[in-house]
Length: 379
Ligand code: CAA
Image (spheres, rainbow, N blue to C red):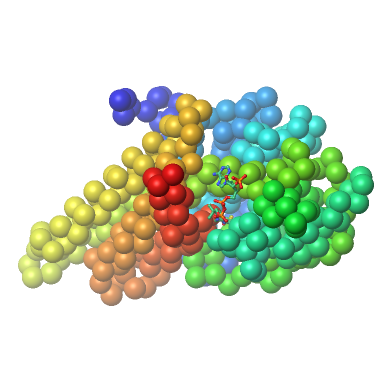
C-alpha cells in the first residue's frame, strides 16, 4: 500500500489550504452571522479549478482525481463548510452525474460551463415527504411527447438560488414505482419555477438552501439523462460519489476543530500549567486524533476505489457515516476544551460544531449509511 500523495495531489491540497487560510477565513464569521452567499469565493475557487475539478479537460474540467478532491475538500472545510458544500454539490452531485451519464450534446451545453465554474448546479431529489425514503417521489414529470410537464416541490436544495442548472429527479410512471423515475436537466430560469424562502439554518449558513416549486414547467425531452426510468439509479449513483465529498467535508470540520483545540491546549493555562499538560485534556486530544486519522483513511480509501473504477458505494457510505459521526464528537470535544470561550462565536469551534451536525443529515443520514452498509453485509 502506498500512503504517499503525488506531487500534483500535494499541490492541490496546498492551493486549497492557502486559499482557505488566507481568504475564506477573513469573512467566515460574518457570512455565518448574515447567511450571505460567498459569491466572490465561488468565483475564486472556479479560477483555482476547484468547481469542476474531477471533470475531464475534454469538458473544461480540472482532470484531477478523487483523492485530490478529498484533500481539497478537507482543507476548505477546516475553515468554511458553508462554502465547501457548494464545491461538493457542484463537483459530485452535478458534474459527476452529467459527465458519467449525460449525452455529448448535454455535456457540451451544460457540463462545460459547470466544470469551468461559470455556472453552478443543484441536485433536486429531496421532497417534503421524500427525504431518506427517496423512492417516494411525488414530483411528476408527465410525458407530453416532445417535452415533460413538471409539477411538484423539492426541499432542502443546496445552491437553489445560485444555480443555473438543476438536475431534477421526478416521477413519470408512478405505477412503476422507482423504475418510473426520470432525471431531467432543467434551466433554473424556466417559466413556472419559484423558490421558497432562504432556509434559516443552524450551520452551513452561507450556502443557499431553499425549496423549489415547479408549476407546469416544460422541460424538453432532449434534457432527459439516459433512458426512460433511469432517474432512481442515477440518483443512487451520484449519491455514492457525493458522499465522498461530504465525508471529506466532515473530516475537514473535525480536523479544523482539532487544530484549534490543540493550539488552545498549548496556550491556555490553569492550575499553573497549560491545559494540554492535564491528562484529561491530553487524552481527549489523543482520542480526537485517532478518530480523525480513521476518518481520513476511510475517505481516501473510498476515493481511491473510485479512481480505480472499482465499486465504491459501500466504502463511501462507511466514510460518510464515520466521518460525520466523529465530526460531531470531535467538534463537541473541541468546544469542551475551549470551555466558555468555545461557546462564543469568536473562537470558531461552536460554528464547526453546528456545521458538523448537518453532515450527519444530508446526502443520506448516518442511519441511511448504516442501511446501505448492513444490506451489503447481509446480502
Ligand atoms: N446503485 C444502483 N442502484 C441502486 C443503488 C445503488 N447504490 N441503491 C439502490 N439501488 C437500486 C436497487 O437495486 C433497487 O433496484 P431494483 O428494484 O431494480 O433492484 C432500487 O434502487 C431500489 O432500491 P432499494 O429497494 O434498496 O430502495 P429503498 O427504498 O430500500 O432505499 C436507500 C434505498 C439506499 C435507503 C435510498 O432510498 C437512499 O439512498 N436514501 C437516502 C437519500 C439521500 O441520500 N438523500 C439525500 C438528498 S441529496 C442532498 O442532501 C444534497 C444536497 O443538497 C447536499
